[in-house]
Length: 157
Image (tube, rainbow, N blue to C red; front, top):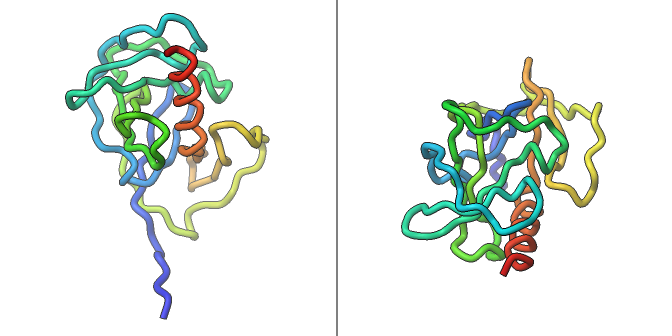
């Protein structure tokens, strides 16, 4: 007999404009923001590298990738450390700038529906946007995001 999951614990990750929603297990830790070691060149979304857990990990700003208004890092800025789903990023982790701490939520079919007001590119880092009561979080394509980070890291090497 197949068992279906009725609820999923997720995290609402605050951005400057909007939020992401990700499974709770994707985020290893949320740490205080410290300026990243800048990459030599490249797109605005690739912020450079920080030291975490005795390794150097890449840092990204999702707003730049999604065409949203980014904020300059400030007192509320945190770094969410994501565990990679694939093995394309050496070290298996990357950091994502947030505007505060992620909020734990339980998600089920009754509280969410696809909100297709915005069209997201097929090869971009967003799968879709959902309506969840009074929130409209974005569902990121984490595997695509990892590919973009890995490509950027390879270009910089």
